[in-house]
Amino acid sequence: MTLGEAAALLAAGVAAGITSTVASLASLVSYPVLLALGLPPLSANVTNTVSLLFTGAGAAAGSRPELAGQGRLALRLGAVTAAGGAAGAALLLGTPASAFERAAPVLIGLASAVLLLQPQRRLLSHRQAHGRSPLLLVVLFAVAIYVGYFGAAGGILLLAVLVHLIDQSIVRNNALKNVINGFANGVAAIAFAVAGPVEWAAVPPLAAGFLIGGWCGPALVRRLPGDTLRVIVGVAGLGVAGWLAWQTYR
Image (cartoon, rainbow, N blue to C red; front, side):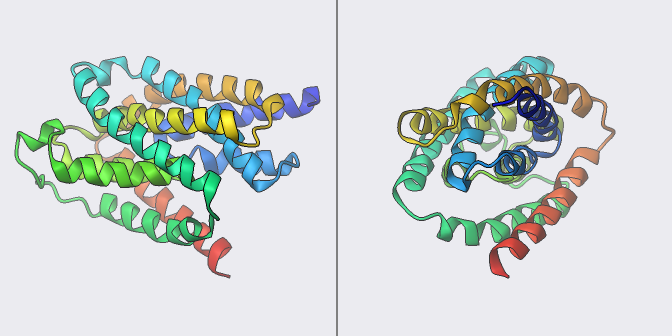
């Protein structure tokens, strides 16, 4: 690892950390940089996931106003996403990635469309809005499997679920998304650290960038007017879905 490569990873981590908290697209910034530095795809994926653990830590630190009063909800939903992340990591280490890679463009495209077409009224009752809906838990578990397995734009899927099933502002849901996404990534990172081909030399600069970017991102989200965040994530997600579809189906 040269000094220039470390600097490139640090810069990519900062950009990806900010992007993760604002538009849920961290992996689409950092993963190509790892590939450009010569890492094989599987090694780049698991190295990226291990480093992403620090985005969640930075985002949680930077989102304390939005997370106020959400501690128990974050722990409840985080336990579900952690279990899903573990299942996804096990799938990645034990099976070919082709099936999930082919499903990824469809999942991300649908989630992005759902965000953009979000109705003003909520779908669930007040009780369910506090994270006790069986539907919410099942869908979050399924999305967390994807996060642990492949992860690209997984935050878009998580945010789409939270926006439609929890009755609170999108800024608070975005902060909650960052935390429970961190649970899924954290468990997957532990599995990859033990059994995956992690390129450890790349982790410190990338992780430092993720930590800085994750901490700065919530301040930007806080200043976005109205439904701007929802539109940004939705449009970006459609773009990602199109790019992934072109890469996967061509």
